Structure formats: C-alpha cells, structure tokens
Length: 248
Length: 252
Ligand SMILES: Nc1ncnc2c1ncn2[C@@H]1O[C@H](COP(=O)(O)OP(=O)(O)OP(=O)(O)O)[C@@H](O)[C@H]1O
Ligand SMILES: [Mg+2]
Image (cartoon, rainbow over the protein chains, first blue to last red):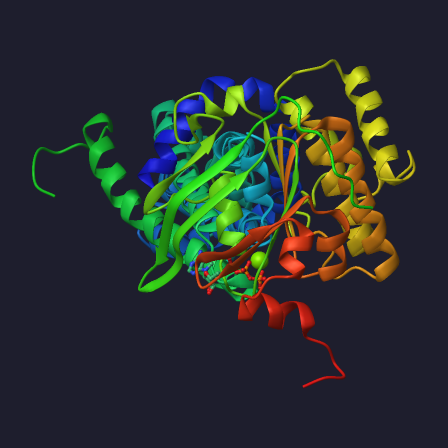
C-alpha cells in the first residue's frame, strides 16, 4: 500500500496529462455522492441540535448551540462522516472497477501497451477523491448547520432562534477550525483512495475475488479513517485554541 | 494457408532453461525455445501445461525463477528493452478496456504515448480496424456490445497499432465458430506477412496450428517435448504428440 502511495506520488507531476480521466472521476464522485452527502449532513446537523440543544437550553446556555454544532461538524463529524460516505460510495466502486479490470486482464493488457496502471488508473482516482472530498466537507458544513438551525428553531425543547444560532456560529467558528477539518478530510481522502485502489489492484481469484476486495477496501478504509482521525486530531491539537500541554 | 517464407531481418526470441513455480507447483521446468525472426511459431500442449504462463513471461507480466529470455541478444529484463523492442500480446479474452470504445481501445497505445496527433490516430485506427474487417461504425461501440469473435479481432487490431516486432497470441480461436476462427487465422497470417513480426501463437486448435504454422512446438509438464515443421510434428513418434493429434470422438 505504501508502495502504491509512493508510486502515485511520483506520478503526480504527470496528472495534467490525465485531466480527461480526472474530470471523469470528479464528475462521477459528484454525481454519486452529492445527494447522499446532503441528506446525511442535514440529519447530522439536526441530531446534534437535538442532543445538545435541550441540555444547553435547560442550563440557560442555548445561545452557545450554534458554535457547538458548527465546530463539531467542521472538525469531527463532517470529515469522518463524509469520508466514510465516500469510502462506501466511491471507494467501493473504485475497488470493484480496478478489481474487475485485474480479473479480466485489462490491467495486464495496459501493461503490454507500456501504460503504467498506476499512472493511468490510480493517479486520477486518488487525485479526484482528494479534491472532491474537501469540497464535499464545505458543502456538508453549510447543509449541516442549516439542519442544526432548523431543529434549534422548531424544536420546543431547544427553542433557539436561527438568528441566535448563526450569530453564535459566526463568533465561535474560526477559519482555523475549518482548516483543521479540511486537513483531516484531505488526509482521509488520500487514504481512502490509496486503500481502495490498492485493494482493487490486488484482486485475485476471479469474480468472487472482486467481492472480497470491495468488502476489504471499505472496511479497511473505515478503520484507517477512525484511527487516523485520532492521530491527526492529536497532532493538530497544539494548533487549536483549547490546547493543553502533554498527555495523550 | 501454409506459407514457407524466407526470413528477413527481425527479432529472434530465445528462451533458455526457463523455470517458474507457483508455490510448490512447478509450472515451467526448464523450457528451451527458439523462435526465428518473422516466423509463425505455434505452441501446443495440454491444458494446464503452462503455455499461457510462458507467454506471460515473454511479455514481461511474470518474472522467472531462473533461466533467461532473449530478444535477439538482449535479455528482456535489461534496461530499456521496452524502448528497443515492441512486443504486443493478444489475450485470450481480448483484454479490451471496457470503459473505452473500440476505437479508443485500438488507438490507446498511440494516444497515451502521444505518438501521433489525434487526426492521424483516428486514421490509423480505422486502417487497422479495416484490416480485421471492422468498420467505422464498430469503432464507436463498447466492448460489451461485441461478440467474442469481434473482441478478438479488435484485440488484434490494437496489437497491430503498436507495429510490434513480436506478437503473441493466446488461444486466438478459442470460443469462436469455425468460420470466424478461419478468419482470425487468416488475419494472423496476413498480419505476419505484412509486418514480418515474429509471431508466437498458443492454441489447442489443430486445424489452426497446421494451417498457419511455420513450426510447431509441444509443451508438456513444463518442458518442450517436440519441435519442428508441421510435417515433422505430424510424423512425430512422441506418444503425447501422437495422442494429441489423433484424438477424435469416434475412436478410443
Ligand atoms: N498466477 C498464478 N498463480 C498460481 N498458479 C498459477 C498462476 N498462473 C498459472 N498457474 C498455474 O500454472 C499452470 C499452467 O497454467 P497456464 O494458464 O499456463 O496453462 P495453459 O497451458 O495456458 O492451459 P490452457 O490451455 O487451459 O489455457 C496451471 O496449473 C495453473 O494453475
Ligand atoms: Mg492458457
């Protein structure tokens, strides 16, 4: 996997040559995931308001809800949920496509044509997913906050007006929180892309192998996302406001 | 269809004591083979004897455990071999990219390596497709819309676009009806006559083998057990070759 990552990195300067493949992949990702991302974000934002809202309101802290929802979405739930969504929706498709190309000798055929499968197939996919996923995060953040505000305003137990919600959101959420989320998302995206392509290229044993590869690609991606999430959060901690020294 | 041809300049393929095992299974057990420049050389042998594995070694998709493969006098694993020699392979299943049209598949080598401008590529693609009796309409189709025989012909066209000095065919007529099989056999001979490429064909099809070969070899249990012109092979006393050539439904 690291080998594939290295090879992809080395091929990166040649991405311009593969802009057609790249555009195709980007379109594919947008097409396949925008609607799902929209629904998912709306409800995640909503449920955050629903869980935290009553607790804060009871203690007279309802005005803090906007910042809480926004920060949770930007730094944690947005990156993780969007990456998992993409692993399930796009990563699986990548593993299946490359797996079937492997099984049906398309990859071998490429190599006999002197075309490097990493450059031709993996590079555009990894780059596309790394570009698309951070964009998806921004999109998800907007929709998620709207969902949070909606629940905050219309749920009787929360009863925080949309104006108060967004006001607090604006004062609490800083650019660096969003950058924190974007960095995470980008690293998750590269991971999902490399893990899934690697799994696809490694497919063995006929059509049944494709199924196995897809399952492994998605499961491994999710495990990597969650482990990396902790590691990255820990590493980015010194750069956040609330940093405290030392420990895990 | 047999054509005794004089050999001009071209690429000789030599295999020396090639060995390959997968796990504990020995597949190639010291294969020696000489394919002369420009000839059509047919490799026959029982299923599972390692014919496809041998081809995959020749094109560089597998690495041998020991032994060597030479193109003229250059070892295939040497630096820059791929620049000096153009090798093409026609896979048993065609190996066409399903996400590309027939035309894009055929032109892929030229377009990916930026060897020609787009207009020129289009012209070459149509020319090669015409060689295998496919028209401009077919070039817009996707591989999933083709029959097995058409896929194979497209794969041949794609190989010819490389203007290869060595062409490898893996079971070019399996899964084909006799008429299409004959067509494909003729294409192989025609392409060989035109390009003078050294041609290695793996097949079970006795009619094809004796119809097109300059020489035939038999591979069995990882070794070459017989080599020679079709006449020599037909007269071979080797029990395997004899059984292989005389097997028929009406006799026991
Ligand atoms: N990648 C691989 N891993 C393990 N074993 C393999 C692999 N490729 C081939 N083999 C084994 O090598 C042997 C020879 O296979 P090969 O495909 O060369 O046979 P073949 O002579 O082409 O047969 P056929 O005429 O049926 O195509 C088989 O027993 C096969 O199981
Ligand atoms: Mg075979």
